[in-house]
Length: 198
Image (cartoon, rainbow, N blue to C red):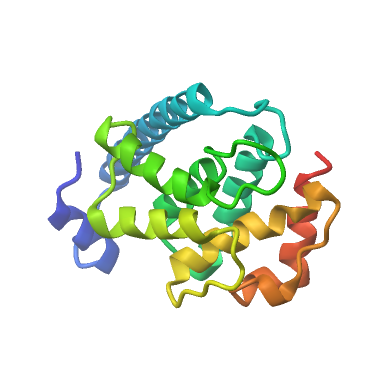
């Protein structure tokens, strides 16, 4: 495996490597990427299974798995552009509606989701440092209230990812309730709309 010094030397060009060494480095990086992807997929499966066990609604309901997946996809698109914390946005996608008790008015579902996120941490289903957990919980607790504001780009990105999926309800997302500039673009609106027709 590559040492930190070798990575630095490779990046800044201070060390010249043979074609053979470059191939070895590429192989190491590919292996590392595969391990990381595999770890992510395993933790993703554990997360979704833990949430599904607790979910009180039909998993295919408007606040169910398709919505969670859409919010995750929209969130990934936004994160690339806002530089928000991917891990928090991704976990938000799957937890924010996980404690809904009905499809209509359920004003406490965000607070229950925030408590559930802390429970998932205690059970070892998710791993987050306190500052990230606090962002996740705040985002979950307040996602259904467009009157609550945050200056934190990660929290804003969480909320925008959810609100851009209003298409599933037959509602065009209202730019007045979106937080980030990128979420308000025509590209983001069209992309999020397409996810509901796949």
